Image (cartoon, rainbow, N blue to C red):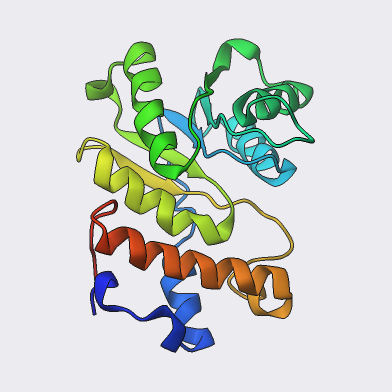
Length: 196
């Protein structure tokens, strides 16, 4: 069944788990850059730092301009400060500070990547976000990025909101349901590519 044909409200827990988390795992491959989607959580920062220190990629690109009242800085700048606290060299950190959503993360980051590397030289990006957001990150990259770029999916290691426990906390359950609804909506609107 294609994503555009799914009714998220009719899916069982097992089906929701497959839709949101199925096939989302780190393949262990190295890349040209670690691409971290916006979010002010230490989980994403820690994951990016681990990937960098394991020499999986020589650069980290942080994308996110949204700011909340309790964190006036753009998400990318907030994450940069936290990465530098993990002794990641500032010269290895790229930022995109305008994006307000996942599509803008990808589109805005393409210009940063073009200026730093030239897009035609990029072969693989390591995508980092929360586990429930990874499917949307992958589909957005496949929709808007050049088709020769490959992706390694590297969800953060938070203790909650994983494929094996998302339904155990009401907040995480709501996030997964909302994400499933959003995926289908964005595909139907043509924002994301449709897929099986």
